[in-house]
Length: 285
Image (cartoon, rainbow, N blue to C red):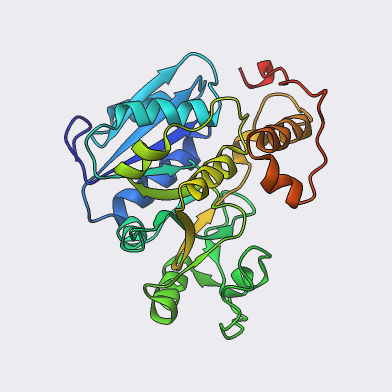
């Protein structure tokens, strides 16, 4: 699909370095997606080979001189996405399987506004296999897929998705707190109703905030039980040139969530930090 043509789905992917993982993600999308798509790649000041992706015919490349944070980068992509009926938000450290986005879209109903897949964590970029046992022991999912028989051997991502489709085809389950934005899909009209991601969140919390906003208009967000995506978590942070205590960002994001949705987070047991101010983000530049 050409970068300037109308696609069925626009896939917004913020990146900061990690060329190899980004290439793996793009190649997996190319191999597994039958619907027309366009990847809107927002490059946050990469210093590796990431600019090479602007030569890809299916990639609309946006270059930032500095790291704009995840929320602001996604918003840049949303501004470029004006015609496709569906919008996806992706991390660049994922690997998808056959008909991932087509299957996710089938779950979107009149009240399911946002859908995402099951997430199998990768230990590093060289681990390309997943297992159903890993999904069964994941605290986020084990109560959703507890009916699966124990699987002792590791299966390929393709085999796992084939098995999940056979057992859970068309089934989704609401999550209590948040659908993480490592890979999510929504209809364009939902994005127009909910709006942009809140720009004050610093690489975290923006997905929870979006889910709270969906709830306020009586929508739902769910995880599709028949799709699994491999996610190599925290790969960008791990490759920053210096070590940094990112817990200060986590604390700020949590406080901002409380300030925007106080009743929900007080009910969750959160203790407000009224003196806290937005931290310096220069480490990301």
